[in-house]
Picture 1 (tube, rainbow, N blue to C red):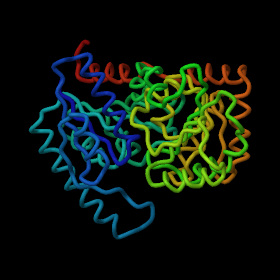
Picture 2: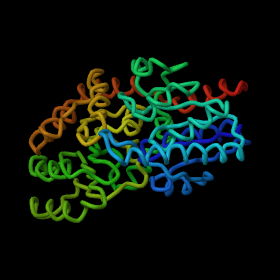
Picture 3: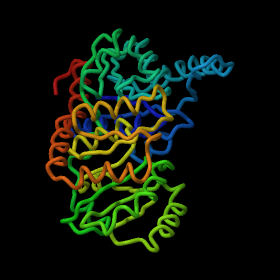
Picture 4: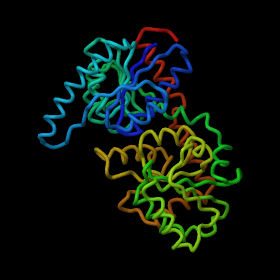
Length: 370
């Protein structure tokens, strides 16, 4: 099968597309790929690192208020459609999949105009602007959260698949996770992370929380600050505590996140859709602090989905401080019955076979049997 992938802007749009590619490779050793992304997006760096052929178009997103920039965006969209048609005619894909971000708008639209089967995947509980537009043209819309199919009333076929990124973490080694952190394998690990570049509000709360934690009591806190905040956060923690205790591990970034997640007992993090798919695939309880700086406040909607099912506790950023964070963590990590119940709820929400479900739908679209 020949597949064009498109999606970008953030890792949350890119990694699900890569997960689908990896699943296809596992099922079809003749699979061929082309990833069409944006010239300015993160995908231009990440996708080539995954050894997936990459081409780009120049496209920007719409502003949500009247602006002359939107006129330029329309022109770029039309130019992107023309460029995408040329790339599609040259590559001759059997199917095109878009995983969100404005870059996949012209790509999936061009494919639909050329009569190429198309699938779009929505990671969030509240759909993005691009996917809402594309749902009228795509053959299939796949959603990450059960019950959100109704968000695409104009879709020809809307199915619940979960997020393909969930499949990526299911084979990760907990032993390697412990070893990479230098933590004994019988330890309880609380992972605190604010996204790939960190989050100042979570950093500040962690600094304020550190004195409440005491000696750790067998619990190891792994705190991922994000590169921009690493030095100032480590310095502030040392000033608070005198020195960094052996139960507190302060890191700028984690490169082997699936392995670290595999050894994690409780996670404190934002509520990006791809990350939530990973932690539910592993059944990790969570304290979620949704970013208030995202379109349509979709992270809170994502987090509330887990909260309603008993898999997470939600702390809004405006309510966040060291005491509130410590209290939320202590209620879970200090009560084995609570933690076990949350873990079971989290695991029920996980779709470990998500990538396989998406790939199965792609085979149906092209009329081939697996």
